[in-house]
Length: 136
Image (cartoon, rainbow, N blue to C red; front, side):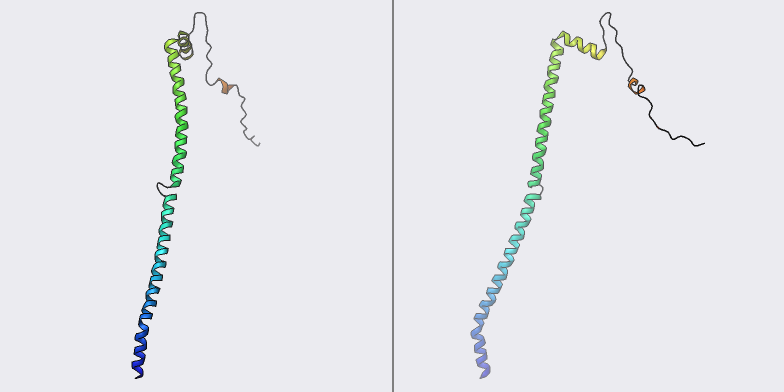
């Protein structure tokens, strides 16, 4: 009879043991899902910050856009200056004369142009190279 009572006790405790096991499995599944969600959030945050189209790439693109904007403004100023120069050359005879005299070395009657050779500034400098004296 002792074995029948122990079986009935075990049968009576079986639903409680099954409920505890279910609770433990549920707790581990919940912890696993929380860890997996946290890891996924970290991976996504890393991608948002350091990814191909992340915040760091966005900051680099912004700096590049600012530099290109500055370059575009400089080129626009240069373009305006060149348009003004072309306009002066097309409409102002004194500008044409100035350009011809400057670039083509044209002269008026009675004028003399002195052209210095390119290397003349180097020959005016004294030779300062130091050579070791030979020993007798």
